[in-house]
Length: 179
Image (cartoon, rainbow, N blue to C red; front, top):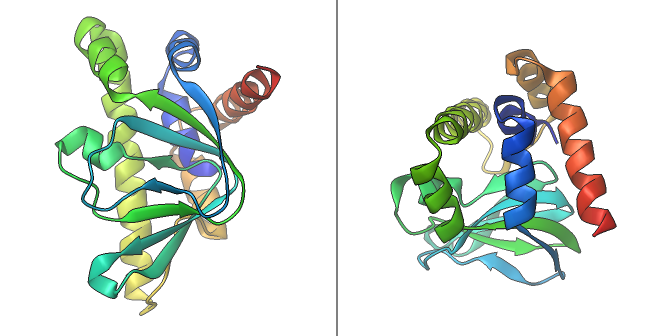
């Protein structure tokens, strides 16, 4: 769950309210491909519950990692406008918050303060993910886990107010489960 704290720690309560109001809570069944490598994305996803598998065609569609609750998906394609570089498939039933790309783009263009907070959050998130990836490849593994015990502590140290960010995530889950 710690990776989403990076984002929630940067956004305001109003920003999160907007995401909830404009996002869609989706149950994803096991075996469902949420993101297909090389195909355009129409949303940014926040994994609220469940586990997903990451695979790339350059490794013969071998699973190279897992995504668990608290991860954000589609952020790279959202930021750079390129097609996804991996496929992501649900291993178990997942709860996802999908924020439509079109609505998010409009919000970013209309609300400068939201835009600043959002891009700062995504930058910190991607930096954290890249550092973790480099560390794990430095350990000569051929498998990525997007969450490990060391991440939890390191990320909490980087989040300006980790308790607030964590309570926001719990609040987000409660609101989505209640709807």
